[in-house]
Image (cartoon, rainbow, N blue to C red; front, side):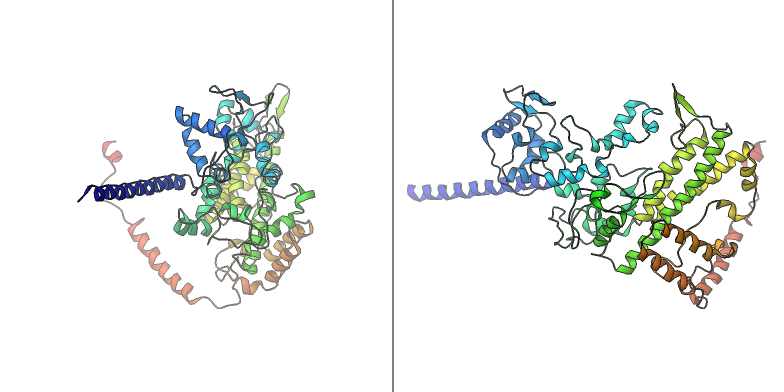
Length: 539
């Protein structure tokens, strides 16, 4: 091989090696992009931003933030550091960078984001996400627990509504992670679950329990591309909804919004359930908000299912108010009788039946029956979380109510004593009822077998009808909902299954249940072991 051929061979090998290194570098950078939920971008920024990047990388200061930014749409569009961190003399967060004479902003706020995202910032500022919950009597957070705990507790989430000295409200990076601002991360249910979790608002748990969440876990987690574009003309690109699908994303018939209150027809987190009036001058009536949610539901579900589910869940939300009425009644009665003395701080008397301290079990009961169990029951009903509607919700509400009555009985209240000592199952229903013939799927053929109240209460359905009609006339149900309910009522023998002969499989199961009962009776209570217990042996 002569020298010229060797040179050409070396040149070809060098080119091949260089190409391989480029491929490896691209693949490694792709891993970084994927890790930050981003895509391939061409980074190009002005000299000022490049100076920031070079300095941070040279000194290893917050370089992961730069890595995240490099995967962002901002980087792709040439939006660098200074566009978000620009500051003017006198700004509340302005400081001079130690390594330069540059004046920069420590806290980019929604006012900074607004320069490019005006609509999104405006919509957010008009939502309940931006609402200052501290305006509500906050004795539970500001009197009855230490402030340092509140700052690391409640405020971790409620600072989503942070008020900034520049006049803006909120923190965009609560949902969109800093520097990358990924839409995919913001759409992850677990992002909403950072705050919407726990005993008082377990929305992430409710979602994961629902069929929506079940499909997402089985087919979508880590597989669906959540970085999609959304508007009122584009079909929903995923098989089952994530949180933003229902509350924010656009779909045929409904535009995208950053106002998470725009589709909420109920205030179901408050002490009393009520139809929303939030920004009604701009968002319209609760019926308008409900229709927006229906528009989203209609992309996946049939009209009958939507109407049936929403009516049944609406009645459950209304049912809460009747339980609430009982808690307030007993709270006021016990306070007037001096059984539950009020908490005072100086001249301020915390007389609210909700925020009255936890120095007595009855007071804790009042609070939790709204703030914990009452919310779980309503939210579970509205979001397809059966277990949270039932065992974590209405079951515990019922338990709390009977315990509250027991408290009065033990302390000499004659009305409470009469209820507590009653042997009638109606003792658990000291409140008025809502109901709907059948269920959300239609005919409920086991209804004649199960609900004892159907048999115990005279003219049950006539009384239920009067209650539902009153709610309708009060403007709490739509005309369509009332017509839907009346169609069920007028055909209740069909929807309750009472017009049909006993189900053959039900007959079979009754016989099988007899065998089960015989088996567990013999193997359980009737089986007596011959030896004494250790306690009997020793004593």
